[in-house]
Image 1 (cartoon, rainbow, N blue to C red):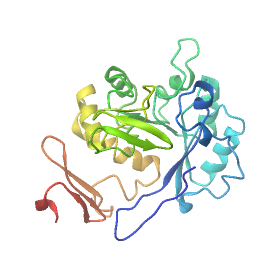
Image 2: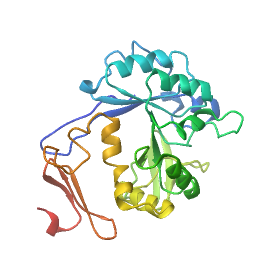
Image 3: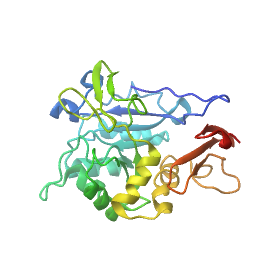
Image 4: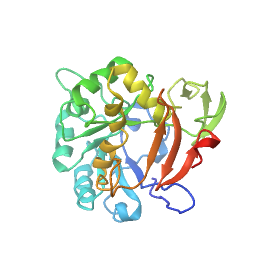
Length: 278
């Protein structure tokens, strides 16, 4: 499990880690990391907190002990996400009642939507309390379903994510990932059997894709990667807006919505050309 983060005056800060406790891989074979899967364990999670670098934990609500872990973590200020799960609607509802407020990788490694047993997806598409994480690369989720999710949940209920793996930005080839060879073709990252192995998606590309798939406005698309995740993590008092008193974490976009520069705490952390070095 990932429970480490860092902050440094010399490099951009990672605000916290996302730890995963899931079941879908063991049940359906959909995960690459079966050896890393584990059951909810209150003792193992005893020191997880935002202060320790853990802000978000993903779990499958149908696992034994999951609801107790949801209550314990949310009581410490850790946000709990539902995902990598074959939960029924009732099991998902119980986790929502216990305090879960996010969903990891909507549609991926989840029970398909059924009109008689809507499962976890049925809950996530209809409940305004939950923010859903969505990989908008057009491959993890079909563009038509991205549009459906947008119509159901909108900018306050959707958080665009990338699930990008280490070969992002690298040329086509084979790359190692958790003991597996991943085949990268410039558009997708796949295992030898054809399963997706993360994405090659950049966040600015995800914003552009959302606009193309749904016809939404730039301001609404940007909200899914700024104000909505900041609110989810309880950081909306200092992040997610351009306003007096907020941290100067800024991204400058070109007219075609490509990144020109990124500032962290007012300092240039990335620039696409020398003229944007500050």
